[in-house]
Length: 266
Image 1 (cartoon, rainbow, N blue to C red):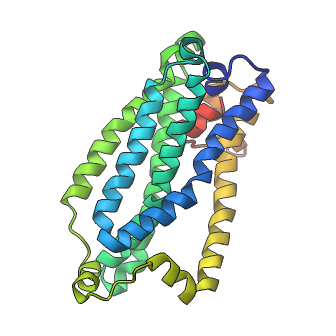
Image 2: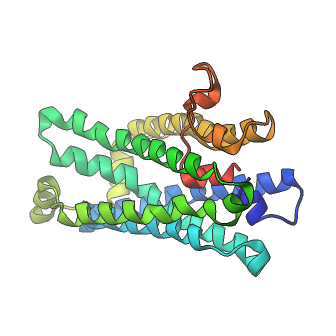
């Protein structure tokens, strides 16, 4: 109900929805590239500066979407700029969660690494719930207001999250484990390649399990709101967030999409 009308208004509704999901998917296409490039950088210069960079990339891409002109304002350049913003987001996301896992486990005591290593994953879904609430709130606006400016609010509000994240990460010290490795002078020239050679089976299993959970997660966050809105006729606000008027067994009861995913599906 947003990207297809704002950025792809000159094609059929079905084609516009497909174009919106394709734009959303391009962000995933560059994630492995960002993960490999920034993981190498993190092993060379440190976890902290790379995690600062990932926040900047994700935040800049998300904030820029909130300022994008529409197709009616600048024509084909509107979806082109949207694609570039999604690619910027994806490049940063590719190293964000993995880098957070690494820094959390390295900074924790040996007996607490499992617990602290789980926190970034939990934080991810807390963010999804907050984003869902923001999207649900703006979805209550009249349709003209929602399509005109309301959908931009969650993207623009992300600036506050970025500022908080940058303050925290600038204040965080580098991990002692990385400092010890750097001071020893025994760093690998190509750390990613060394990791693949030393543990190929474990890495393949991690990639497979990660793909499985991502497919299930984004099918709910990305596609299901579109299905509920376009096929079942629910309002965009209803399909975006939990509501006491729905039964616990309703699929949409559990939806919590992030701003980009929600906007792409509307």
